[in-house]
Amino acid sequence: MKIISSLVAIGALMLSTWSFAERSPDIERELRMKAEIVDAIMDGEPVELEADNHTFMGIFTEAENAKGTVVIAHGRGFHPDWPTVVQPLRVGLVERGWNTLSIQMPVLEKSAKYFDYVEIFDAAGPRIEAAIAYAKENGGDNVVLFAHSCGSHMAQRWILNKGEEATQQFSAYVGMGMGATDYKQPMVEPFQLNKMKMPILDLYGEDDYPAVVRIAPERDMMIAEAGNPKSKQISVKGATHYFVDKGDVLVKTVADWLDTL
Image (cartoon, rainbow, N blue to C red; front, side):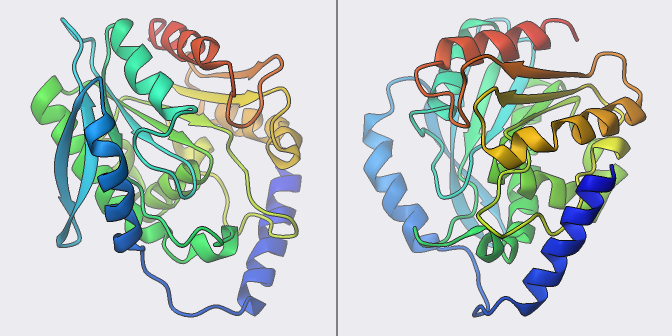
């Protein structure tokens, strides 16, 4: 884990010299994205969730005799029906017997980089908690948290802040494309994988971003340290960070692992 520790230290130092205005999620952009997609949703129902005194969008899609619910946290600047990663999963997992709840994560303007997003990571925690609560109310206690790319950074910040209080709220964790940042902007805080005792799937593409691939061995060591025998790391051959044209493979890989739990 020395590589991760060194990169985190460098990232924290760089962030301390990074020039930025005080930031908060761009709610207006979220509302614009909602208006663009809500009428085009073919599978599932839009739902209104609440966190930090404002509402945010989710898409809840139900399966027959559901095994549980997968809460899906998208990557940077996207929305709950993003056509790569998110939409294939939120629909495809239903066909494999899982409810899905895809949620709007906090976003900034399109030009924002990783260091900018670090400033709004804390805004994601209440949304994740609200989504898990909704999932339990509408689908039972078996809730899996799936987080992609920047969504995984946000989820890890929530777990860093809340510790056991956070990890007790869900049954399993899927982190996809973990460690993606921007050029010369290393991660500013460590993963919490070694502190998460539930089953973990670390999923990434063979042709993922270099940072994601480079620190895969360290992530694997952290998962091993946590000690859950059902945890696994999977690299999918030929897949990129966004699994373009590999939605079916993505769904099968995640669903097959979920079936082992």
